Image (cartoon, rainbow, N blue to C red; front, top):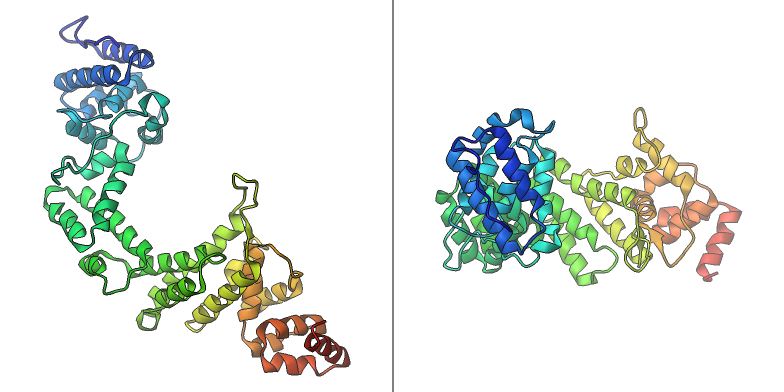
Length: 409
């Protein structure tokens, strides 16, 4: 790719001449190897900053040449984008200039391009910059670096995380070198790793980060982790996750616990809106082990209900668009009308949640409804509580059904 010169027409190029030379660069990006493209972008971007001082200055001068919603003409923007592909003497400056102009998120097209540029097959072999060098020194501003290299940032943070407390402490020791937005970004990624790890409260990394953790976000992630593997994790792992998810519920303030239970609501909501098929054509909404899944969901709901949680409103949103004016009793009545699905090898997640909600309900509460013998039999068989069986035996039809159940018919 030819090396382009901002000053080829004039020692004081006009905005139109700037856009023209950047447009020539953009048209030539398909020519030559990535090294020559990157080198051309680096040279041209350095000339542009040398002339205009800042990207904000470029933006002001080229306002009339940019498309609606763009902060820079797209030709100029792409020059700086390519100038941040690899490490060179001005990489940090280029990243920080992009951040100063685009960190407010107003130009959504530019933000998408920063992350999407790596999908180009021509850039597969480009060695990406590292936030921390091999010597452990922080090389760039994390918040600026993440605009184009967020996946690399996450990978390096994860590497330090896997070192345990010393690795986490190394990151924290570099906070004095970061601006506020960078510290918030690193806090976010470190806390997410804590929430996802299911490590105990006394784990060294969790202790180091204790003042940064949000107990509500922590608990929401615990519930999501617990529910995500509902139909395939081992009994031991499920029990460990269940215990971990509720380990501090007793001591949490009621309002924070209510917010934490949104993690369960989010899982129900996701189940209601999940659709599609995997690469083998399998329906992603179906559970491989439906009966096991229902039993485990019941266990989760029974534990949560002891702390005042109800899944009814969220479950009910699957069937109705509005909850206005409807009580929990109204919603339970709707679920009872739906009853239970026939025994089968597979079941969708929404049905599993609905059935688990019925089974987890208080026995006396269920008996306060006008239940048919069939539904009484189903509830009695699934809950195994004496009150339901007693109610079933109160009618001749119910006694016949109960006898059939006892005989395994």
